[in-house]
Image (cartoon, rainbow, N blue to C red; front, top):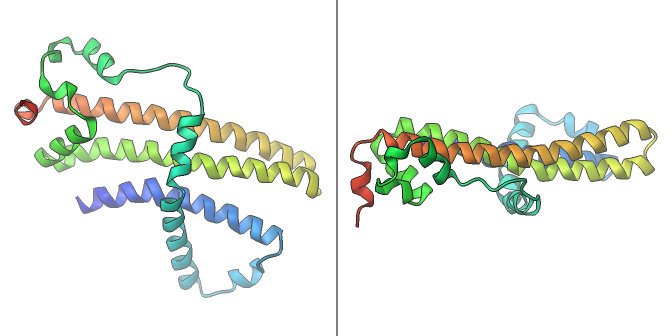
Length: 202
């Protein structure tokens, strides 16, 4: 269980946070607020610890930005996980677990078999990671647009701006897809647990 929680937090917070650290470092160095060469001469062990802590904290603090990006970007189509699952598995129509809250259902699966439940958790964590990586990538697009006017390589700047913009949107879309897969995976696993319905009967 400890490994599963560690993986979830690494994917959901630390990896997106590292992108914020990279972005802020670039802006600070470009604006000459810090001497990057001097920073890189610091003891490696201490530098790694600072980067890891900053990444983790920024990932937590910036989590709402990922949620905001998820809400703002329009959805091309609305996908009902439960309806799709029942269409593929009509024999599960009258089973109580199908209508249960997905997070409560995942907790029930983890109580039954932590290793099996960890699979759905990893897919969900990956989806959240992609979604939370979108804002710093989009901010990178804004920084590239500024570099278009302030820098000396306009072609490189506009190329980066376009790639970052497309990449940020793609991250949100793929994050949604993995979130859908995680909910579907939760239902599929629960289907094969014989007594899972007893936990959701009134």
